[in-house]
Length: 295
Image (cartoon, rainbow, N blue to C red):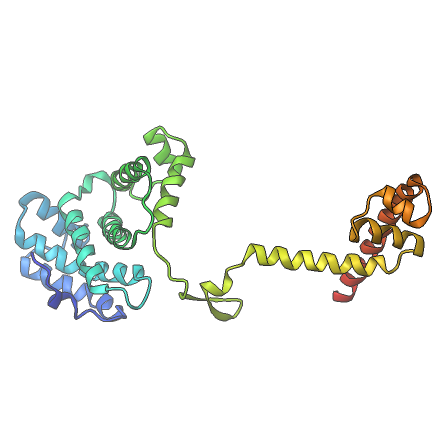
């Protein structure tokens, strides 16, 4: 069965109509095939069971046509921006659906929709990753990512659900951290626009507006600390203030300060210790007062 852009471009941005018509489409295919309705299996699994026995192209096409709304729903869900080529994603997702139909084994225990969803999602994500990759991961991690994806596919069919990171690590006999590293590399390879908008704290803003310049922040903090220190020095006694001014602002040695003030070097050292202790008390008290005013 061949999917053309003409066939798939008719999909609408909202799939509620197609989703609601899923059963009607399926019933039509089901009736045309003449499959009985008294068996306990649901209609989709009846077709899958028939295809497993006959490998009939007609049954295969019926399954794919009936399940195509699932591909479209996933494609629209994975479209990250309104400019993404959704029709292309549907085409790629259809490849995953075809693989699911051909490879599905009902005896493994997984429902077809669970198995198909994983393969469809995987095909689309691989397409988007290859299309937008900006950072090449080390070969070791690329190979590990490929092995993990294949293993997840097999375990999903076996377990009837997606396996946990711990289960994947146990199967591959590697640490869980290595699994997370492979996933993280895949995630970081996706391109995100800095102009992409998101809603946060009740307002919409772009990603670039949330970026913080660490150097700028440190500069602001340094200026704030300097301002607090200058204000605290104003509250020191005159003798202590002179020693601090000459030592830290005029960069004189204790011997030079002692000569300038006509006192001993020992007295300069004592005054500096006293001034440092007093400054700590003043700044601490000022911070407490500021916090109380804010509260």
